[in-house]
Length: 94
Image 1: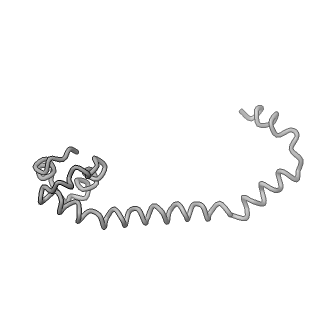
Image 2 (image 1 turned 90 degrees about the horizontal axis):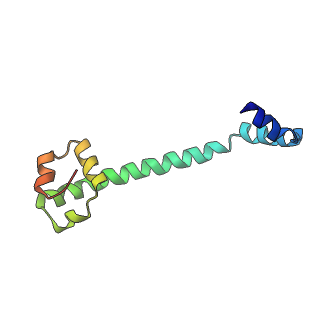
Image 3 (image 1 turned 30 degrees about the vertical axis):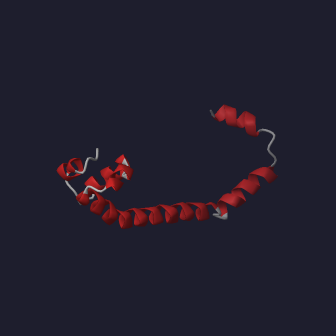
């Protein structure tokens, strides 16, 4: 593998290496990571806000239960907000 990289990079000038070193040291990539973290946190908050609605639908055995996904059922079970028996009584699968 190192031989492959050596062959690949043999024509690199110091300018190309310096540019990549500079970009890595400038930490521009951290903005992308923070953006990903922010989106993940927003998604988790939205999911937590959505759980009461899903619980209501399953408790009432609403016709909206058909829109509850397996992932959402698993999240409800993991949060221990409902039991497996309640999920099955609502006609949902885990």
